[in-house]
Length: 243
Image: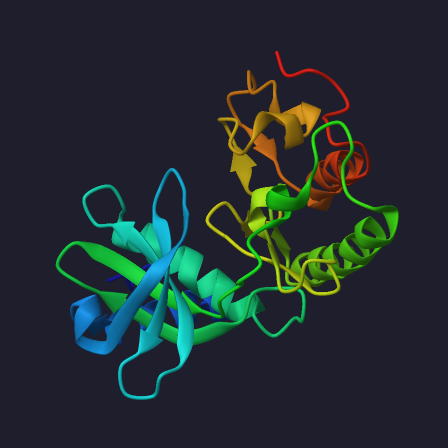
């Protein structure tokens, strides 16, 4: 009797999780579940955007001032929140990227995380229409942002959201500025089928998404947006009118 043979299908090995994926998993398990008022005293609102708002708070026991970003649970997926938080946390060692306290919370209505407060508002607050900002300040700002973007790109990421509102000021003369808001940051090579971000800062190749496979993102898209931002800093207007 012939000996039967069996062919065993090779099972592909699962790729090792990236550091960001590991951080996401750890953070999901260590969320602080509490109401904001239990641990923090709200001082005032620092800013408000389409997806959430930022409050200046102090820690009730230590008195530490912090910025608390709150995203409504009703309109925010947990993974979306965790992704933004973990990307920011993984990049926070750079001096021109917002510093994080490493605390993520979940209350009955909000997801939130804490970072260093910027009490001089953001870059948009000092750009004078049709005038911009002084050239020395623009140079200071540009030097720091280039360094931050190079750091982000060295981690295999594309920032994708360069605009004055996302550059926080730590002094009025731009001697210290920091990038914030990493909700749109994605790994290099990620394919986009829909335009995301603020149109005046969006690279031309992302304005035509007819390709069903999408457009792979890379660092050149941040370079385009940075060029538009620099033009706005020096002139106080966009290089073309928004249609």
